[in-house]
Image 1 (cartoon, rainbow, N blue to C red):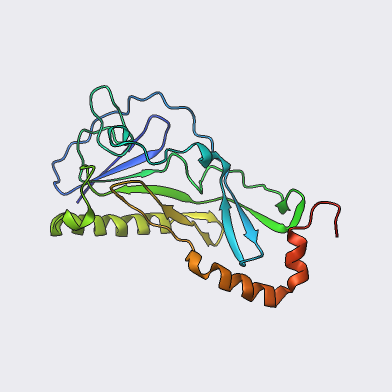
Image 2 (image 1 turned 135 degrees about the vertical axis):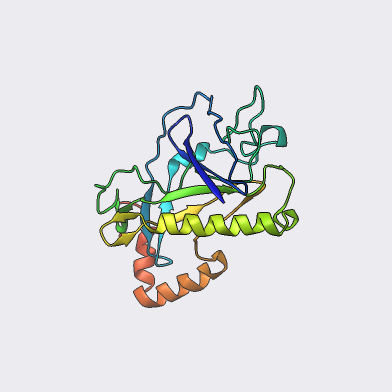
Length: 221
């Protein structure tokens, strides 16, 4: 497995993983991208006893584009995409619209404005997109054993690399990899089917009055 790291036009890292050791990855991202702006936060949700990501900048993210505008297909003349090369085996790159980020403000207030029970933390983390084929309509089951093995090796490599980063002293960096269409989607969230059960458990623990107060309008007690 050959690993080649480059930088996209806005400074994000992209890594090519090739089966052949003689693969050359010299293509340059020719897009004129704006500077990265992201200010995610982690907020404590008392109703389910979990920390959740708040990332308002993701409202402008790419969502279900048509096939001919897919940002994850290889670049073509006149249509540059997230992947500068005209082909690839497996590619990993930093999400352009991340739920977590490494370059975020570390000094955040202890709680959300107007809601003292909603504790805040910096939204430290790194979100990566994992593309396992350059063919838009190809699915994982069609990859074959060699390419599937490469994908597994890439997962292992990214797990090791991201696990070695410390966001804060003694606290490992949380990671999320997500993507669209033909890419692997990896989420580290609690299964939403268990949310009502968790809410009931928290209600039993803290009492109805506390949960009611979370939704009380300002000035009402």
